[in-house]
Image 1 (cartoon, helix red, strand yellow):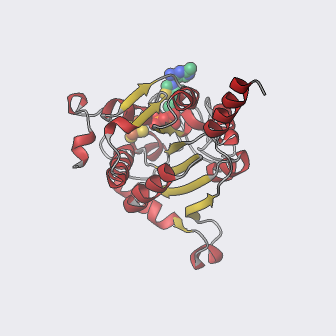
Image 2 (spheres, rainbow, N blue to C red; image 1 turned 135 degrees about the horizontal axis):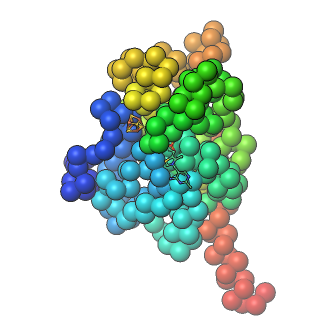
Image 3 (cartoon, helix red, strand yellow; image 1 turned 120 degrees about the vertical axis):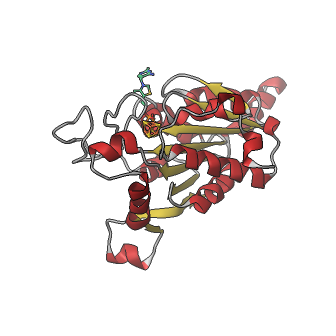
Length: 267
Ligand SMILES: Cc1ncc(C[n+]2csc(CCOP(=O)(O)OP(=O)(O)O)c2C)c(N)n1
Ligand code: SF4
């Protein structure tokens, strides 16, 4: 199918600013789904609130547009009641790791089979550019006019430590990687995390003098490198892209089924 066949055209034009990275991620996500040959009825997309979370309105799957920071909680309910469906949860960095941080670590710890896509623009885009736990030290935001003194989480390290069994990262510049990594994450049985660095030219770019969207995309090319590359050894500041973790342990819904069977037999 064409990408546009997965879109709810009645909700277009979309509300994203010109140059926003979130549209690139939506495109990559739809290409991944298309390559997997999944029917629209086999997918549930669950989102919270944020510019990133608008995705649930734009795609023609089963969708839930829920409340800020709670997408993974709703998604857990969906997955437990309909484990045969593919549950995908796109989230902003604030949605996933500020207000939603607790849900994130516990969904990862349980290893429930769903794909969390973290669209990391290092800022609260929708509400006007407040700093998030991903902004990092020295960043300027509307709530940090003299620069931010909070240190940032490393999403990949956090996801690994919390127990996610598939952990990957790429950026909005690396369009083929977006669809490849999301495809592999959907295929993975367990809690999958794909962090995608996404530019917000309107707030992050403007406040931090990173230029226009094209400059921000170019920057992703310059500051990232494949995992274990020679460039990383020479410059430890570079951000690695690729698959960091891919492991198999018992998945939550399957184990829950076994508990139901045991209880039915009265054992
Ligand atoms: C309980 C609650 N608190 C705060 C808000 C206000 N709010 C809406 S979106 C948002 C943050 C959005 O940032 P992020 O999740 O990083 O997504 P982005 O807009 O950058 O894609 C906030 C704080 C809300 N809607 N609900
Ligand atoms: S405010 Fe930022 S994140 Fe939101 S649509 Fe505009 S560019 Fe994208």
